[in-house]
Amino acid sequence: MNIIEIFSFSFEALKERYVRATLTTLMVIMGASLIVALNGAGNGFKNFVDNQFSNLGANILIVSPKGDIDINEALADDLSEIEGVEDVILSVQQTASITSKGETQTSIVMGIDQNKLPLIFPTISFQSGTFVSETDNVGIILGNEISRSPSGDETSVAVGQTVKVSYTRYMNQQPVVFERTFIVRGILNYVGSGVIPIDQMAFISTSAAKRFFDRKNYDGLYVITKDPNLNDEVMRRMRHIYGNELTIISPQVISNVIYKISGGIALFIRIVAMVSLLVASVGIITMLHTSVMERVREIGLLKALGFTNRLVLAVFLCEALIIGTVGGGVGAIFGMALSYGMSWMLSKGISVELSSNGGGSLSIEIIPSFDVWNIVSTWILCIVLSVISGFYPSWRASCLNPVETLRRE
Picture 1 (cartoon, rainbow, N blue to C red):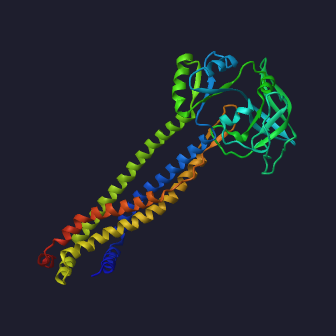
Picture 2 (cartoon, rainbow, N blue to C red):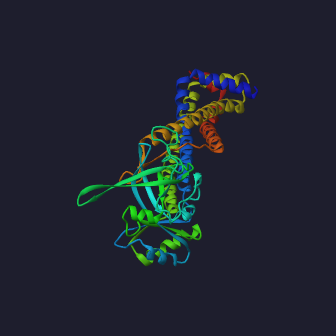
Picture 3 (cartoon, rainbow, N blue to C red):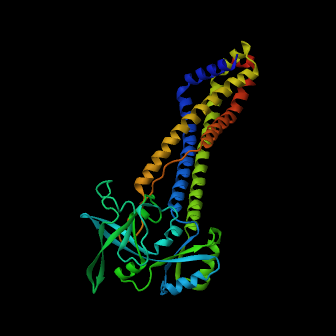
């Protein structure tokens, strides 16, 4: 018999016991689909995290006050003297409403030295216009989504037009609305959602922000290190000097923590998936062992017709091979679909608030990413485990004595 005839013979044997064969194949499918789905969702999550932090420079430390310390020019000068610090950028921010052509949107308005914005957000660029100088008290630049109408995709404001910025502050326990008109100096290109939602933000000069938002000091600052590898050392020196008076956030550290957490979860799910494949292997052993017991007389007849031990071994191994090949292939396809389903449910079910006072939210949008080698290796793993699992029952079938098997009832 050639290899095609052996496979055909094994396939017919499986068809005769299709219920048992189908259930065993389903166990392989479940294990394979879990592994493929996990790899796809894991790669997609990694890409999502990378995208969220790609808008920020790698050498950024975000600093805000924690105790009674004031964020001012004197603090910025002191921080700039720390070894490894290249620049310190002060900022003021306020959640406000921006109104243009009768349409209002909520935004985070940031007052900052805009000549230094590229140090914080290396990916920003202008659709039109330019930065606002520090001496300009009426200029404003808008994120891409703020420049668009809330009811559609068309642009609702252009460079040179005016927008009204308003916010509410409580004075003597009474809400007071403050308003001011700004001239649009620039509109940013679309960046994409991130930890800091640039597309939903507006930027004015620090002098205008302090005057309009009535700030004596600043709300926070950005420390630019000379090299991303110096971030931890600069953080250590800042904590040594200021103790717990400052909250220091390193986007790089956050991303590393997220990777470690997701890696631990991924490892746990991989273990579950491998257990599923091991259960499938036990199922293959059970099915083939039962099949050998049921087909003793058939095996004896085959040997009487000239089948060698090696040929009988090949026939039963082919049954295990077919189960592993079909189960691994179908499981890989189903796993890809499952990964998209998991990502869709995750995107619908999770939204991270970026500000406690209406500053918008960050949606978790994970697009699965598949590595061809991971899919192929999972398929090969299913085949190898199936063949290994089927070896003992196949070997036992090949060792049966033809005379004894023909006598058995």
